[in-house]
Amino acid sequence: MRSIRSAALATVALSFLPSQAFAFSASFRWCGGSSPAISIQGAPKGTARISWMMRDANAPSYNHGNGEIAYSGQKAIPCGALSGFEGPSPPPGQPHLYRMYLKALDASGNTLASATPERRFPE
Image (cartoon, rainbow, N blue to C red; front, top):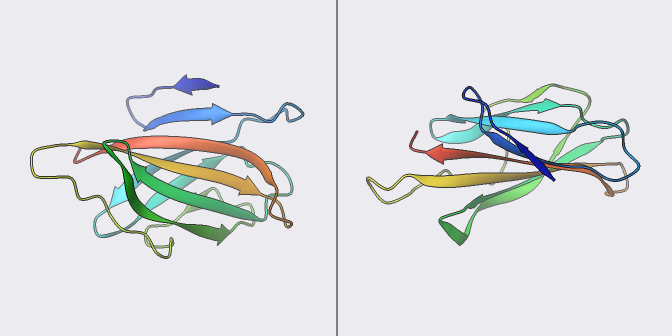
């Protein structure tokens, strides 16, 4: 596993399945009260769905939602598209680190690749 840090994007941890020669990665940005917008790069061939789960690294037992969304090659999932998402809510004055666990799934639900972008709130 390796990490990439960019001032413009959230940190992304990349993981690869041994037989794959692609780099599935993602980043996200906050969208007010709706679910975040997610940018997707390098989704493997055969990806039919993207599963997602968000956790607060400072309060890991708190579930901010999870689910799946259809994928047909788009480079982004727009604000508000994730059903069941519960936005960040750290105590006032205490920024928290949020991780979005993403998996590229084939039509049978097998994991093809995964990515874990993270971002602070508030920024």
